[in-house]
Amino acid sequence: MPDIVKQEAKTTLKRFLRKKLLYYIIPNIFFNTLIAYASFAKLGYAYLFAGEQNLARLTLPMSLFIPFIITFDILKKTILLSEQGAIDLAVDDNLNKNKFIFQMATIHGLCVLLFVLALMFGVQLNLPEHYSFNGTLLAFLDGLLAGLYSVIFTYLPIKKLKKYMFKQTEVPVSA
Image (cartoon, rainbow, N blue to C red; front, side):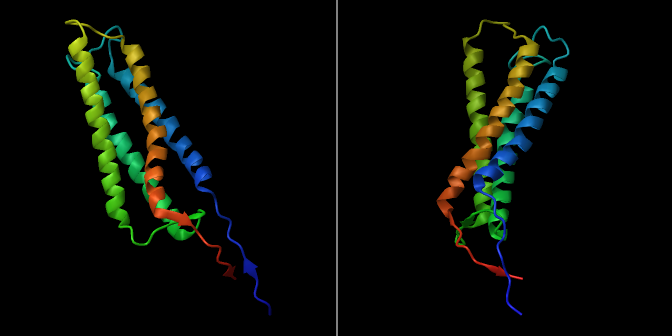
């Protein structure tokens, strides 16, 4: 009986990332806008740091956790698919994968948190005393920021992972 050679269907990294981006961006925009909108009970005004209705209590945790979680998830899934041979690239065996994933996720989360905190402090210092923002506008901007994080932290970790990736050689699988 002759051996039947079966080729596995592999997806490209680009297609995989586009699909994952949709899974990340739509819920992040929707839920972060909705949460921010619901958090500002009196939509007429909101502050950056002061008072019950402040933007910092929503934006700062979001700026830490969204980059961390998306980086962690996309790297973990990409490396897993690479090990299974489901994508057209392979990860170097010498890479300590778990350490790399956790290190990248932590760096991304902390850097974004510190950048947003510094930016908010800079804005706060340049505003007049008792200046307030429109709560509805801040809710929508918070959702857009979550969408921006989704896009950036879907592609940025893969760009850094590509240093450790190479094209897989085609190995026929016999049934």
